[in-house]
Image (tube, rainbow, N blue to C red):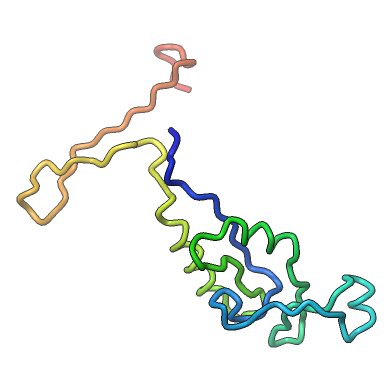
Length: 137
């Protein structure tokens, strides 16, 4: 079924400075101070983590993610953060409205709306048109 409200999103955890997703920092594209990093990657690090490990800034990935951005959201989070839970929570929140039930296109009705407990009467059956009647597999 086609959903005209569905969004294409590209979200990533990449070599951007912490705070990039909230517009508190910007990516700096500059040559690396370390000649070997410059030779290996052609650019300096986009961020450096607490253990002094660096990550290359995204270039093409950033262009794609920003092309699919919704509102003012930046869907690129720093790989240099020591904890990804905030980034993963933000990603989950942003895609939550896009998730639809795979096999049940409608909501299940409550048999007794007068009570505070949901009392569904729901049975879902899968029908495989390629399966022979009476077969168990």
